[in-house]
Image (cartoon, rainbow over all chains, first blue to last red; front, side, top):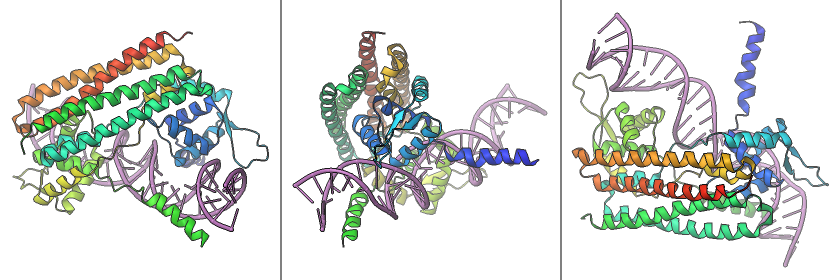
Length: 198
Length: 198
DNA sequence: CGCTACATGTAAGGTGTTACATGATTCC
DNA sequence: GGAATCATGTAACACCTTACATGTAGCG
């Protein structure tokens, strides 16, 4: 093996491996910045508060991803007026990359539904404790329904999101359908469980 | 001291929020072994085929977890009759541990719904491509509905699962409710998207 | 002055998958 | 004898969270 191929291997092994931020974090961050420029801190708050029902990002994802996006010139720093915080803005290339990423088929994580796992083995747990699990899921769905209702009201007041509102409403509606399905299922399930002896 | 009080606040903010160690893989494996003894290979097949709609485990999880469970005497090897494969059986202590694990509140993974992430920023993508995403989700839900139907029929024929059937049916029903909710939502969403100009 | 919110980042660790390596058994 | 399936395991890697460290800004 000659020196050059050794060096090439070194590059791919160490340098390029260092920034393997996932496409989906890039999508979320570029998407948020397509609505308005933000700092990393605000980015996390916005993602938590507006995408929170179906998405999450932590600081440990956001800052390295922002650095990588900046390196690729997909975002840039806004001129700071003596401010110490760094506000990022999406670039033209970033907008194009965002549209490319959005068009890619969604990659869902491997399913891991702790409630259904427990219920599947409910015979080991007994009907009463199984029912407790279902009741908790129902309550959680009720809370989500209320939160989604509040989110809808808030959305319709926020003029910055006017262009996005029709699409955002679709995501809120998806959450509501899912929550109502959980509630209906829970009511049926509780009926079934009450019929299991002991 | 102010430094200390700040640190104390930091500790209470973070430590109280800390979650118990997951080990949901242990739950799935002990649960499967509570139905019948199996090899690691079969374990993975069974989990894929019967819990597949809401759970997944890979070999890279199963074998190390089995070794750990054996170390804790929660499972044991069945006497091999000249066979080279290792069949594991749950022990008494394992059954008790399983019931403890099942009673713990389910820990759901952080939400990461790629479809809704894309739809939220659908204004960047346009109504047509957004509709494509919704159509794919709808088709996927239709397929899931058919699979769940088949799973129900199979369940009712399998006498080994008789004791578990009522609980397993609850998990199948949960999948059906969720799938139908997706289909209903998709139809509504497609109507909305068709009304967005450009 | 002290509290809360704003802000940036990294190190360590947890959790899981994928790709590989290896071989036995079964069936045609 | 070759293919498919059964079987076991590990190393590398991908991804993400949590804990930690360290401030500044604004406000009552």
